[in-house]
Structure formats: structure tokens, C-alpha cells
Length: 140
Image 1: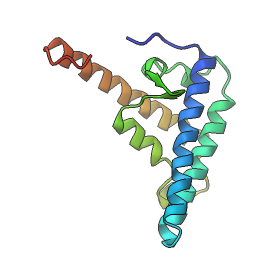
Image 2: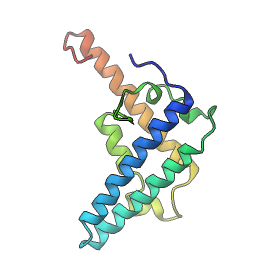
Image 3: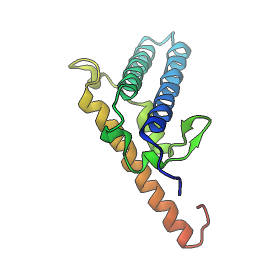
């Protein structure tokens, strides 16, 4: 099992992970520049993800979102969290839909919620890997 990171290290890798997702969304906005709806959706998600990264970057060390149990033990590869596919999809889709913007850009509650949901996905995936390994399927 991965050791739990310090809050400062967790902030750094979480921010880098979110910014990488935002950069990917920026690329999608450029890729679909001829489709106004797709470009707008991807640009919205890019903005939401950058806002999320800035939010995480400003969290104090004692903030609970920097100490979420599964995310703080998720493996790091190339300076980013090696998220389970479901968590990565959840993150990449943050702010994508029009409904998310009806009352304005993402607020603190929405940003904290997406971090907690990612933590829940990572915890569930870790438990499933452990169960498969105990059953002799050996992916842990």
C-alpha cells in the first residue's frame, strides 16, 4: 500500500493532476473549434478545472480535502495521481455540462464534492484490487 503523503505533497500532486486534465480539455476545445457547442463545453470544463486547481492550491495544510484517505495514498506517476479510470473520467468531466453553469461557475461546495467523489472511487477500486489479489488474481 502507498504511504500517505503530507498535505503539502498531496496538494502539489493533486493540483498537477487537475491542471493536466484542464490542459487536455483545452486541447479538446481547440480540436473541436469548428463545432461551437463542443468547443464551448470543453472551454467551460477547462475553466472549471483551472478554478478547481487554484482552489486546491490555496487550501491550508489542515484542510480535510488534502487528507482524504484514498486520494492521499493513490500512487503517483510522472508527478500526477495515477487515478482509476472512473475517477479520471469524473475529474475530466468537471464543469463540462451546461447545467453545472446555470447559476455561475463551480462553487466551493461543488469543488469539495468532486474531490470527495474521486476519493470514494479510489477507495472502492483499492478494495476491489485487494479482493482480487486475495482471490489469487494477482493484480496487487
